[in-house]
Length: 123
Image (tube, rainbow, N blue to C red; front, top):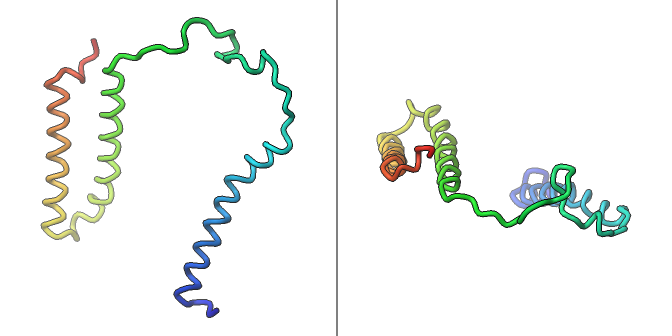
């Protein structure tokens, strides 16, 4: 196979993918084979910061925590999209600027909605 052929490039990507998967799976498989297995009631009990577990492990969180988490994810993704857009701002056509303006308007709408519902106020 020629060193710079089209198929050779895909072969290299496949080999690197297999090597990457091997590096991820090798420690797991080695631990599975070599690790001692001596289960006991102490080892199978719930571990809670070095203390014995107390109370019900199934607790319910208030829905506002999920709203904060979703808002954080949305605005961190916004930052990921804004960085390359800002770096290429001067070379973008008007459609790129208009697309990002629409994206920012949708995010602003979500922020205004969360604000109007009172999700951003800590009670």
